[in-house]
Amino acid sequence: MKIGLLGNSDVCYNSLNYFMDCIEDALHSRGVHTQRITDAANISYTQDGPWSAIIGINQYQPAARTQDGSYVLDSFQCPVFNILVDPPYYHHGKLEAHMDNLTLYLLDQGHVEYCKRYYPPFKHMEMVYLPGPSGSFKSYDEKEIDVLFTGTLDGEEAVINRMTGSVDWAERDNFFYLLIKTRLVHPEMTTLEAMLFLTKHMGIHGDDTLKMLMASLGASSDLYLRMHYRREMIRTLVDAGIRVHVAGSGWEALYPVCPENLVLEGTMDFQQTASLAANTKILLNSMLSFKNGIHDRVLTAMQNGAVCVTDSSSYIDAHFQNNHDIVLYDVKNMNMLPDIIRELLENPEKARKIAQNGRQKALSNFTWDNFVKKYILERLD
Picture (tube, one colour):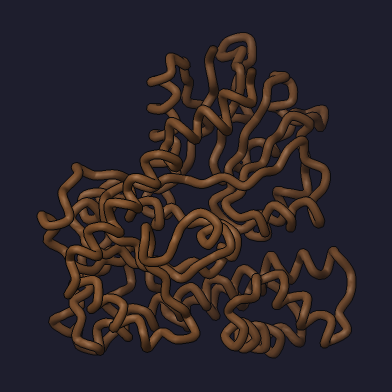
């Protein structure tokens, strides 16, 4: 068996290439041969194939066509698995094209339902998880970092500037701020639910219009609120006197003068964050776009023996138990987060047990080997 792996550019701290490396390693451990494909539009089936399957992450290449208009990868007559790590409306233009042999994997059941409603038909769509990076394991008591968050912080102005060119519409700015306000008041709403609420209220109809608004203003609202909650989460803890490490770009702009208890780890490759996670007692997470899914940061915390402190989702509620293998906070009551963190830091036995339970859960159910077996190899039997 030989499986082709579609390459990615170096984006988002090289995380997509890291995920593909992990998939490749898991395939190799099961005796599967792999081949990296860097240019899907120009690969030769006779020279490079045949493949049993082709795997991509956030790939646009599966939509590549030949001169006669047919899909390049359709000609290889093998299953193609494309994993979207973003909500599907981020990829609006590419999802309009469908390959007969394409399976689409998404990280939230709500995203699956969105695609079923607005982008039919695909051969198959399903929610999956992506484990994060793992470092050299340390016991809880050996860890030197109390609290860590990994991720970018963009300023509000940068988010607004990205939105400016996304759609030419007289009501754009008014609609965007109403969307933000609605989602801040009702953080339990998905982007689609908030969008449907507003479009109905404003008398806007039609699936094509909705998809355009989701791809532009909906995606922009996601980014805006992601930064809002990250900023609120870290400021709430730092202002309460809790020492927090942050890894990623943009955090130097959070305060005019950086407080001593905010430690800037800087920008680093995704794999490098593994060593930080392995050396951390409490790893923070914010879900936002995943109302019925799970972010790889949750599994990164658990795999590395840290306590994951996160807001919840329907998926997390169904698979984990608060204060047993995970610790949950409510974005509507962010002022309670410092007390949650202090309780964990002041009760190391409790925190140690939660971290151990989370690690056991992750290593039993959410590994790359399990992912490859369930979502790739079993589909090829």
